[in-house]
Image (cartoon, rainbow over the protein chains, first blue to last red):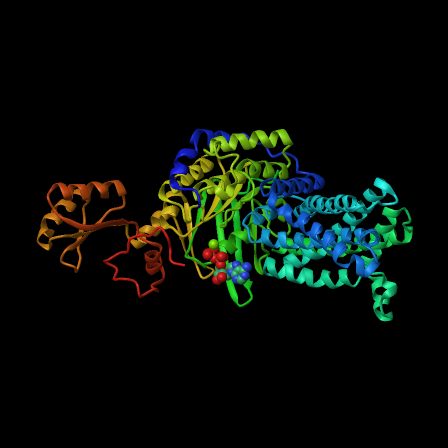
Length: 282
Length: 331
Ligand SMILES: Nc1ncnc2c1ncn2[C@@H]1O[C@H](COP(=O)(O)OP(=O)(O)O)[C@@H](O)[C@H]1O
Ligand SMILES: [Mg+2]
């Protein structure tokens, strides 16, 4: 379309009939791709898109940087008395928040994909049905990893020193990404139910914003009025933040980690089959 | 392996509703193995929906179909293992390069990494896309995109291919390239179900043809039978000077045969189903000193087929002034 006819004449002599015939004759059908191999192939597709349009990583790098700087320096003094003390409190929380916000884009991306003809081809292939979805979410975990890493590196530059060192940070990051993988199935379901990418974005953030702000990401729940405190304490995001803080400081409770993993598993168990059903239906 | 079923596609009474719209309304199809079967119909006739049902992307609300002997609902996975789909929207990933697209499909179909790469290279070469292999598909021209799309459909040779309007929106040169590829595929033994809005395309490629309108098959036959029911193509000429019409009639009569004088005193029409002969006839007119205001050459259009088959679309011109086929059908 953007290519001029002249370009086409230069670059595409057209098909060579003898070669086309040979190409048709030369294949035997290989054994079916395994479920895992199909999913990883879709993950590779996600990586290729990042490679071709690296700008799309701006979302997952600039936003977290803004969050860290803004919250630390804007509210640090007021909420925790000093920016250094607040950074210690808020960094694990911002890690969780940034990565969770990124999961919304998984639904947006799926919705965008659906408007393209290539999905019809995927759906007509003899592959493990959830492979396109599992694969693109696996690809998305790389984005989550980037967002998380940006936050931690920036935190360390600003003076954050996690008590449990590198091991703790890696464990926290792994936990956050596992939870995000589970949560992203909710947004892929939305991505298949709603009509436009924008609608997915709005609905996604309408859900995740209040949940994030009504958690312990920014403030100690003990300072909140009773009913609110009760909600904040059972909010799964608060539990994820507690577990991440614990892992980074070396004080994690197995109970918190268990709840986070169970929640991720439950979200996957409910929403992964739902997403797959909707995707198949088209 | 499946039995050598005599029919590649056998559909009876397919029905599909979308809310209020009945997109497919009792379609029966019988497609022989090894043939190209055309499904001809205007926009909104239900061609794409029919293809999507047969390719297992949609479940029919009623009716049943077997593709290569497999039931499209009960044995959908077996169908998918034996067919490929080139959709109406180009079914390639615009954000990847041509090579990556083919490797992706190869890997998904079970080729190993090296095998998928080699296959991609072979196909890119065969389809004249080797130079564009590393460019993003979004920068491809319509013709290149279509060729890549078809290449993606034969990464592993399918026994049956669905092609949904493979030349819509292409310039004549790209269209001819796509036609050549389709002919090669057929020569290689692949059965093809081809949806199209162009009678000429069906005429060029299809062995058998169903004309579909509002979800129903309204006629079936070979392209020859269909065209015979409509009349062949025609060369229309308008002269600068009506006084030269007798001379023009003589020349065209010599070059092409039956000539018809139009109500417009400066216009005449000759039967002509071959573009080269039409061009020669126009040249002969010019040589004999006849001044030509304009001329056009056309096959009977889909509109005319419809007029002939159904009698509706009465707002079309009188039958003795057949319309010239257009590259684009009105939406
Ligand atoms: N997903 C859909 N939802 C609602 N209506 C649809 C859908 N797909 C097709 N239709 C309608 O069904 C009819 C047949 O469409 P289609 O099969 O695309 O026709 P064709 O391919 O012959 O142009 C049209 O009226 C179209 O608007
Ligand atoms: Mg269509």
